[in-house]
Amino acid sequence: MSDATMQRIALVTGSSRGLGRATAIELAQRGHTVAVHYARGEDAANEVVEAITAAGGRAAAFGADVADTAACTTLLEQVTETFGPIDVLVNNAGITRDTLAMRMKDDDWDAVLNTNLSSAFRLARGVLRSMLKARWGRIVNVASVVGLMGNAGQANYVASKAGLIGLTKTLAREVSSRGVTVNAVAPGFIASDMTAGLDDALKERYLAQIPAGRFGEPEDVAKAVAFLASDDASYVTGQTLVIDGGLWMP
Ligand code: NAP
Image (tube, rainbow, N blue to C red):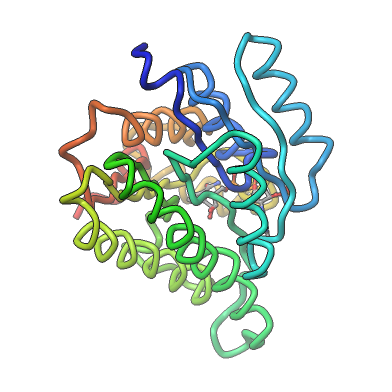
């Protein structure tokens, strides 16, 4: 690991559990100082911090509801005050509120769009100035393969993930000439709390369509995010890396 990597500060939203947790740990293993972020899971976030520090890394936990604009601003201020300017932003926090479009309430639409998409825009906007000044930065947005495919029962979630992919491309066009890359990952079916509640018949149907013959693990996504956050990916920008065991092949 280079000295530069050791000094880098990474904020991973929604890293109290699931994909974000694995990403926080992976980035810490690669030498980043990690801001572990949670909404309600303070204890879980503290456990992630303990796991990182026990392994010799540096991390602290920060709470914020990313659906709230002011909370996003405060989160960035707190992380910057604690560790310094953010070099790597991983917009991972996300929720689902699934139902068919004709039954979907405005609240379900707004909550998912605010949490999954608007938060990513606000946090990216908030970190770009210092990244551009440093002439180095990485933003990785955690989208979903359904943002490319569409998925019945997830109009809000799919719109948020497709929006993240468009946001990724646009930000990449705006900032990539100055050492800042912006990419997305599009996970398929990954074992986490988000997918644990799905019924077994649906899981079997998904599994039958996955050439890799298994569901993904959070670490599968974490390693891809860590690559996009690294110097090795300096010429990769505006891309969406699909991590789905071959579920979707355009
Ligand atoms: P998860 O296990 O449900 O974890 C969600 C994380 O987001 C938690 O850390 C949660 O924090 C945080 N979060 C939720 N609402 C928040 C809010 N309003 N403000 C701040 N943080 C909030 O989900 P996951 O499966 O790891 O998914 C992580 C990301 O990957 C999401 O963007 C999801 O859409 C995407 N993804 C997942 C899959 C999959 O198969 N699992 C597939 C494709 C994409 P607290 O627990 O502290 O409340």
